[in-house]
Amino acid sequence: MNKHHIKSLLLFTALLFSASCQKDFLDNESKSAITGDTQWKDESAADLFLNDIYQQVNNLCNTPDPLDSYTDDNDGGPYWKSWRWRQGIIGPTVEGGTPMNNDGDASNYTDWGAVYGKIRRCNTFIMEVNAHAANFTPAWKNKRLDEARFLRAFFYSYLWMHIGGLPIITEPQNRTTNTPEQLYRSRNTFAETFDFIDAELDSVVTHQYLPAKYSTGHTDAGRATLGAALALKGWIELYAASPAFNTGSPVVGSDPEHFVSFAGADLTRYAKAAATNKKFITELGNSAYTLYPNLATFWSEANEYNSEVIWDRQTVGNTGGTIGSDFLLFGGPVFIQGQYFTWGNYNPTQELVDQFRMANGLPISDPASGYDPQKPYVNREKRFYDFIVYDGAPYKMNWMTSTDTIYTRIDKVSPSKNEIDFGSSDVTNTGYYFKKRINPDRRPSGNRSDGLNYVFFRYAEVLLNYAEAQNEAVGPDNSVYSAINEVRKRSNLPTLEVTYGGQVLTQQQMRDVVRNERRVELCFENKRFYDIVRWRIALDVLSKDFHGMKISNTVPANNSGVWKYEPVALNHPHIFTQKMYMNPIPQNVIDQNSKIKQNPNY
Image 1: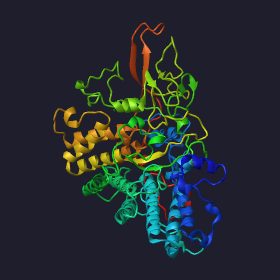
Image 2: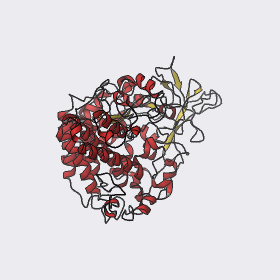
Image 3: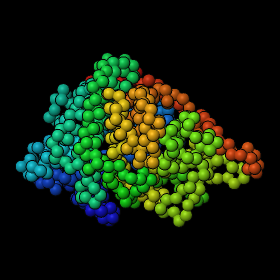
Image 4: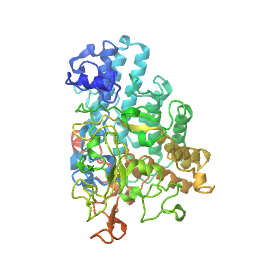
C-alpha cells in the first residue's frame, strides 16, 4: 500500500496506525474495536496490535526544538525547553522532569511514563502471542516476536541513554493480580540495563528470523530488520564503552548505586563494540547496505529505503496527526524569494561550520589548508555545500521555479529579510541556516505536510562507530583508515593518507579525526548530544558561549568598502553543570514508587 493510498484511507478512519511501517499494514481496522481473545485469534488481528506499537516510535521530525538544540551545533529560539535547559534550569519537578520533551510524538522518548507505556505494549504482545501460539504459523510468530523484542530494546535504549539504570520489566503488570513487590520495582544498575538491551538485540540477530533489509515498495518496509537490530546493538555498545560510563569515576560524580556508569573501566568493552560493528560491515555491508552515492539527494521521498538507510520512522505528508511531519516548517531559510516560509529554528553555529574541512581534506586551522577567514565559504568540502546555507549561498529546491540567493549579511544598501538578528525574530541567530534533511519536493508549510521519513540509523554511522571503537580498542590500524576513508570519499574528500601526506596518525590524532567526521557527517541528525555526553566533553563545550558570523561592509553607506567577516558571540545561555550529563527521574515517578532512587545531584 503506497503513500497515496494511505492518504485516501485516512480520510475514512479516525485511527492512524503505525507511521513507522510500510503502507500495507496501515490498511486495517481499529484495534480498539478488538478485545480479549479476539485480538489474538489470528495473525491479521494480532498484527493490528503490533502495528500500534510501531506507531509509538517517535517521529523526531515533529519538533521545533530537536536534540541538536541541546548541543553546540544549533542555536534555536528562546521559546523552547532547550533555552531554559541551557540556563541550567533542570530538576525532578522542572518541566515535569523531562527537559527534552517538547512535543510528545516527537520527543517523549525521554519521558518515563510514556516510555514504560510503550514497553508495556511490547510486553503484552509478547505474552499474548506466546499464550495463543496455536493460532499462528511458526514463521509469523518467530518474526513478529523478534520485531517486538527489537522495539522493546529500542524504547529502553533511549530512556537508558538519558537516565541510566532502569527497572527491567518484561511482563505486563496488573494491579489486580500482581503483588506490591511485583508492581513496585527498583532501578537496575547501568550495567544490568545495558546487558538486558544488548542481550535482547543479540537474540534477534542470532535468531535470523528477520530479513537483513527492506527496500522501497516492500509491504513490510518500516518494520524491524536484522540490520536495525545489529546497528542498534553496535551503537549502544559503543555508547556504554565511552569515557562517561566505562569508568570507576562517574561523569556525574558520586554514584554508589552504579545507576549511571559501570563499576570500573574495561577496555574490552570497546573491542566488543568494534566486533559488533565489524559484523555489520562484514555480513551486511556491500550486500544489503552500501553508502548512497550522493548526500545532496539522500533525503528525498523518492530515495527512501535507499542502500544506506537501516532504520527509519515512516511519515506520510498532508495527513496530520502523528503520521505527517512538520519538518519543512521548522528548518531552512525563513524567507525564500522574499516570502516567509519557515520558523528558522535550525541555525548552525560557527563552532559547527568551522568543523567542515577544506576541499583538500585539511581542517581550516591547518596552515596548509588554504583557508582565508575573509573568504570563509570558498573551497570548502562538499558536505558544507550540501548541508549549510551561508551568506551568498544559492538555494534551489525542486518545488522552486528559480534559484534564490540567501544573504544573511548586514547590508544597509540592499537589506535582506534573512539578515542575521541574533535572536529577536525567526530569522537566523547565527548567520546560517541548513538544508540537510529538508524535503526538496514539497513547498514548506504547516499542517504536517512533509512526507519524508525520519532516519534513525544509516550505514555511514556504522562505519564511524566501527572506526571509533576499533581505534580505542587497538589503535588506528588499516581497518580504521578504511572505514573513515569510505565515508570521506563519498563526499569527494581525499583519503587520510593523501590528506596527511602519508603521515601515520597516532591514536589521539585518529580520535580527533573520528570525532570530527562524526560531527560533520551526522550533523542535524540528533547524534551530537549523545556524543558530547559519552565523550565526557559536555561540561567543556556547553559551558561557553557559541558564535555566529557577522558580515558587514567597511563602508556601509554605499558598500564601496570590503565585506568583513567577524565571528561574534551570541550572548545566549550557556550553563552546563555536572549533573546535567543525565536527566533526573521525574518527581511524580518517585512519589508513586518509593523504591525508585533519584539520579546523583538532583
